[in-house]
Length: 513
Image 1 (cartoon, one colour):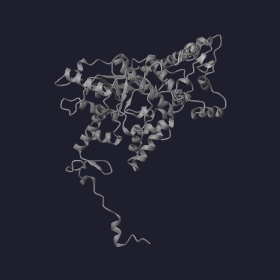
Image 2 (spheres, helix red, strand yellow):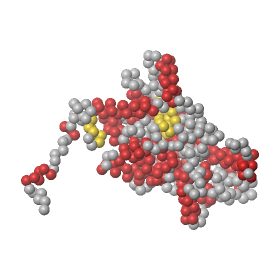
Image 3 (tube, helix red, strand yellow):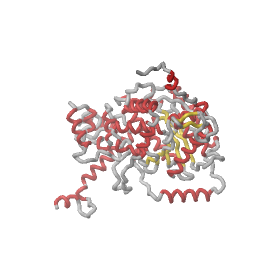
Image 4 (cartoon, helix red, strand yellow):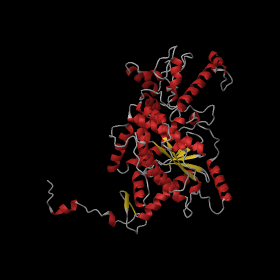
């Protein structure tokens, strides 16, 4: 039997050297100031060099952002996006090594209406954000989330651009930029007096109260926090893309870090977005065509960003979200985050393992022909993953769902292709057409064709809409685009027998033969 009181008792507890006495693993000279992970201790100077190098190396090796190009930085006020803003600001300095050469702008979306914040509270938050942005000298845009209700349907139409050789195009852009400015690149920061004043639309006092109520009513119709967060992410991305197009930006820079992407990868699998994992977690997200979203912070963990912000006093603003102060099991996203973060405490390689696994995912190459381009989801703009055969697992899931449902709710009826309503209310000959036009969702009782909203969504977005008790408060641009796609599909079906196939025969002749 082991005797812990023997003379070898002291050998059981091996002394661990304090981090204050450790030397930096990189320079081997200075005392370490922090420990990133077990076995990796760095001093302040080496840590900053390591942090800055990762950011500029991520942009340099991908060669997505060309010199002189306008890039819109999506800053939420949190630690990760503010660290990204700090890196861009330092990279544009005159004495910066491997200086950045693009022209940045900043956008912030105020989501205070969903949290029930008063106008005074929202103004206070926007004043803090405005003062933070003015310190950078970059042009900035502060946009309330209510502006998503005024977006045009064109935001859901991906713009297909001609694709050239990326390496050749990048070299040509660099040569042209160096010839136009041989000594120093143009400082994208402008004089504060030249910055355009905030438009009336960015003032929460001037936002129509009806728009705020409509947006709040929309989210009140969503039953689960999981669906609310997914819908908010979709609307936020639409507003960012629309702002980038309106202001003339060609790239959208997001502040998602490695920890966030690891959580997002597992949460998307649980939400049924397995087919879109490669696009959602990759450095480059080209789903919108002309506006390409990039994630330069994807190699940083949340711990690295917090340490950097603390040691170099990077300012950021805490802004609550839908999941603030919620329980771990309140949503799939929240539960996944709690699982990954708690596992990371005991197993420091958890986040990096999930992240590196996601890096290996790739999407199948698709044709850039507009006529043959794959159908896009009406919400997330990813390729539809529901156009599968009758023997697929997706069809089996649908059959099981239909067999398990007892009865039909109005919302479920509005999603079925054979229903005659889209808002859940019957269309009669007296007030049906007027009611449908008022809701901007339902079909006309004369035509008898209904808007098959389900066929325009991917599997995960279908689940989000099914968690809504009604779709009547969806933004008008979504419903208008859905009606346009359905009309186009109906017309194509009507003239299908007159169209020629690739071999020159019409479908009807080919079927008869």
